[in-house]
Length: 549
Image (cartoon, rainbow, N blue to C red; front, side, top):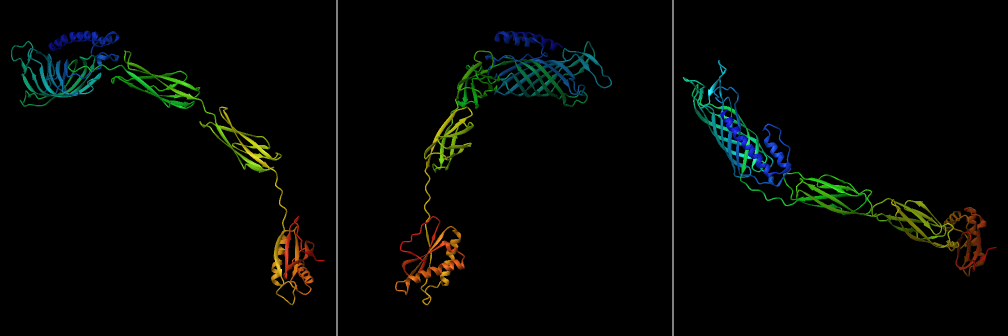
């Protein structure tokens, strides 16, 4: 209890000194928050996080001095051979860090109790004389700390050394008063803790929890044994050494948009880049603009340009890490909403030349640079145009000969229009060519000298073909011209007989109407009959021929 009183006597002024020092370093509400946190009991709720300041933007320190309260307890509490049971006291440690995380620790603790606890048949307690009582530990070993430049810094350590336990005597006793002898033994502690930074030079050790192992000799057997204990500590940490980081330059913020030129309805992305940020604080981003809405609360936002009129728009970005000068910055970026471009159209006619009364296909090809929906219409200076979509038909029925101009119109969904023209030439009707006669096969009579006018089998083959032509061309007529060789006896009569015999085969054998056949004698020098097909409205040239009566 004397150690507790001494420790309390030291801690109260130390906390008062810390409060005063911190209040001088941190002004206004910031200083008041820290002072109130220190003045409150250690077990009270922790204060809310205070705004960051330049004093907390520090490099890691190199030396830590801890002063605080410690509590020892045996595990289990009344373990046989463990003379510590439970004890209260104080501890102090000195830590030196070689790097940002690794250091070495020297730890000293003083613990005491005013009562002796018994186990076995007698389980009561008796008061002891504390003049030589208690225990003193002295430990050394490595420590590994994490986030030493942050607000909360956890650490782990393993310490080795010894512990000295004083003689335990019954209070107010004069004869045979010693219950436990003075002893010194090996000790080892392993565990960790958590520090809360309050100021550059001060922190509160919220908790240090360790396993403590001792090897006191048994007062029954005299042999060394292992005793298991826990040690819990809390208190103040004084920090020294290290250097302040150079103060951060004022925060700056730049932003950009992509794309910088859009049409209404397209999405614009705005991005911000902040520099000189404090790594210990999360930045807060906001976006704003007139004539539109920015979605997003990080360093990137999106803008929906639907409904925006053509023009230039400016978006404003803001980043903040506190209310102090240099902890806020703004930026602006602009983008342009362009007017939609009107469509274009081309117009073609196929064919481009038609006869009067004919038709031509009109094709319109419209293009919207922004892919707006398009509708088509057509008009002409003569004739009539009909159709739907991008294709129509020009009818020239009733149109005069000459050139007809067709206009193709295209309109987008914003009522923007464009037009193009094409021409169709209408020609007068071309008169159909007069029907022409056609020469068919010839029948020869030079094989049978005894019967010079007889139609032989070879001739019949030719006449069979002639008959088929007459049947296919029912409105056509046939001219049969008989000829003879000069010097043949009675040649004119023989030429006419050859023509007559040829007709008789067609009429009698093939059923050709005799009224469709005209007979002639010709002037050709040869024993031959020529046959000519005369279509309707065609004219047979009878020059040099004589009709057969």
